[in-house]
Length: 101
Image (cartoon, rainbow, N blue to C red):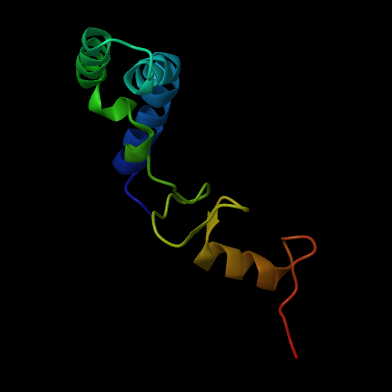
């Protein structure tokens, strides 16, 4: 079980990323635009630096949707490997069976 404060901080980061996503995309496009002037590229770089650090999607951590465990996250299910195994053994995941050969 992750600390509630860490889960809350991660959720706050997700909100900040969503809030600044359009502006960040616009600045990134201006930064790599081959037809742009050096001044416009410099302005885009400065604009990106002025955005909050948490506006970067890289700072968001994938966590278990149930208990917030940060490691062993399975993207397809949104849960950790430990939780996945427990739920699969109990039959709570439809279509998931333990392989045997």
